Amino acid sequence: MTTSAQVPALPLKVRIDRVAQHIIRARLFLDLWFYFEEDRSRREIIETMREYGEFFRFTPHAYLVTYVVYMAGVFETRQDTISLVILIREMKAARQLNGQDEAAVSSLLSSAKPIAKKVAILRNNAIAHRTISLSYNDVFKLANVTPGELRDVTDIALKIANRLLLSCGLQDQHFTDMPRQDAVSMMTALAKALG
Image 1 (cartoon, rainbow, N blue to C red):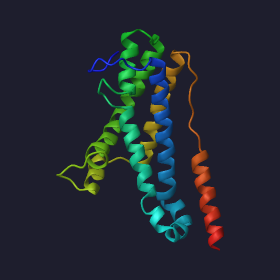
Image 2: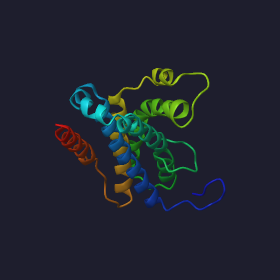
Image 3: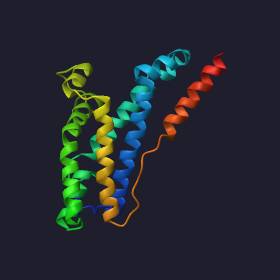
Image 4: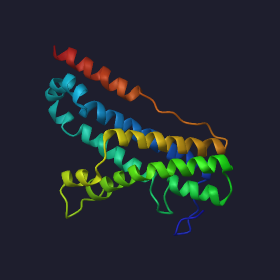
């Protein structure tokens, strides 16, 4: 596959690995955003966050922005991008997926699309581009996406990516809680230091 400018695409295995890494990174940023914004955990850390207010003022937002950019890209439909949609299309055309894998990734992709569209609304209207017709908050109302759905779409996306990875003889990938665990440890240490 080549891009519209006829620049050769990266090798298929490299692109599949890259999209899997983007999904994993998206989940890391989502988990960090959720830790700092979810009511229960926020109640436990809010005083420490206030002590370092200028740092924490925008940090959770940066995590959400990064999540949205990564996940919207994972489901991008432009031919010149590394995305699940394009990789699946390419692998199907080249008959690189067996019947069972092809059916599984098609079903998973169908289940992800409604949430991926919501993420794209956020990216296209509030994050990467700002629409002139809606406020930032109105874009989130329009997207009508929940934190649970944001998490679900990363689960689905990684299942798809792992099917593609395994069908190419590559190792499957897994999410990790380590960055969130480090954030919890950091906030605990800061709270103790503040006395």
